Image 1 (cartoon, rainbow, N blue to C red):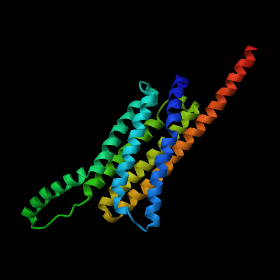
Image 2 (spheres, rainbow, N blue to C red; image 1 turned 90 degrees about the vertical axis):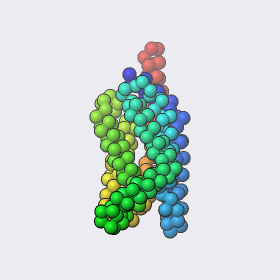
Image 3 (cartoon, helix red, strand yellow; image 1 turned 45 degrees about the horizontal axis):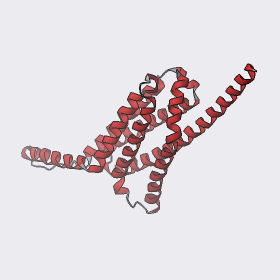
Image 4 (tube, rainbow, N blue to C red; image 1 turned 90 degrees about the horizontal axis):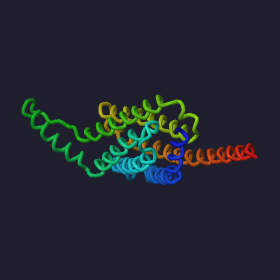
Length: 236
């Protein structure tokens, strides 16, 4: 069962490992430009995060099809998060959250002013809440589903690499999701820096995933060749 599953995922990774490296490098280049340019384009970090979600979602949707119908592959979970990532990326890029927030603030402000004669400042909180909540729940999902999946998966190098990277990714999502949410209450001004740090860490992890997938495929291919050679010798 796991051999057949690994074979399907191998085929997908052979076609996609380079995609992860390219995506990771693109966002690392953005990070380098921000650092070298002394904060230039830092204000665009939410849109950049939108692009990151969008590209990650597209990759996950394509990747989920390689294990479609396989319960152990969690293809349904990967497909589900791929849809949410594409949706979230489009939402952040379209400014619809800002428009919804602006309308909401107007309504809340009018209601509060009628009661207290004071204005309310909530600009940017809806985006912070959405990103924080999204990252937190995606992190929990990756951690729980990967830690408690069947032990047989650990006997396949390719699947083991994917499992470890996704668990690490889950913890990173959870930590940054909590940090983003807390910035809404503690220090609104550090939100952009937290998201910027998340983009850097996630870009590095995406590159590691691509390289790790390529390396595990190479090792498994060599192991298969040795196993086939032994079987041929035994038959002779």
